[in-house]
Length: 150
Image (cartoon, one colour):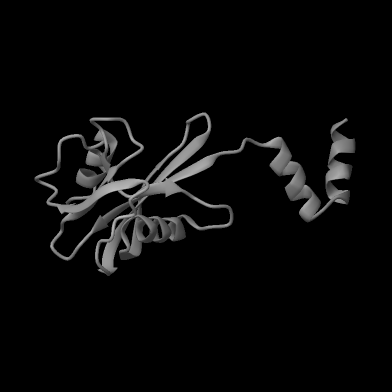
């Protein structure tokens, strides 16, 4: 049976192999977070309308679109939610093991723009000192902010 499987695998080469692998393996959404800092070292936090009451503050976050790099996701989400332009830096965090998603976070630096909140998802956007973060901040985001400080 194994020999037959190997022969078939070799016969279907290329795109067909990728289709078989895609059908066979698990599918995940990828949640991408940006740890956006300005020149003063402050971090950008958003008050998310759709997050649980009392835990609405967090970093800019969203899901990667099909065919989009995770760095592109950070740039897009920050621009859509705040109007700001950022430059993505190093990978800061990667976690798997969830049933349906993978989480990724990148450091990012403010490049320009002025905060213009997208009011459907975001109630407020503000810069905070890492030493003076708001109540109601997602604990995992608090850890990301402090993990990156040396």
